[in-house]
Image 1 (cartoon, rainbow, N blue to C red):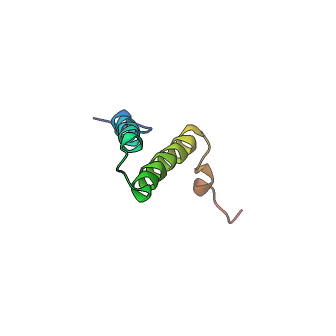
Image 2 (image 1 turned 90 degrees about the vertical axis):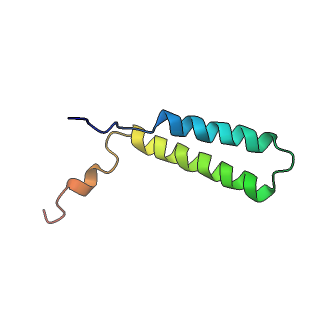
Image 3 (image 1 turned 30 degrees about the horizontal axis):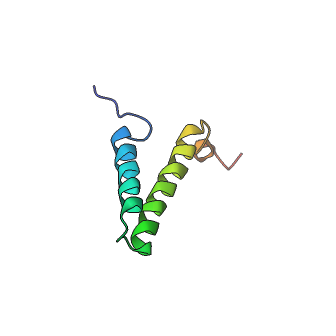
Length: 66
C-alpha cells in the first residue's frame, strides 16, 4: 500500500522559490504581485515550521474531560 509522504512537497517549494525569484526580478511587476508572492513564501515557511515541530497538534488527541 502506498503511504502518503509527510512534509512539504519539494516540487512545491521549488515552484514557489522560482516564482519569487522571477517576480522580484521583473521590473514591471506591481507591488500587489510582489506582495502576493511574498505572502505565499511566508505561508510556506510557517507551514514548514509547524511540520518540523513533533508535538504540534498533539493536544487535539487529548481528552479535555479529565
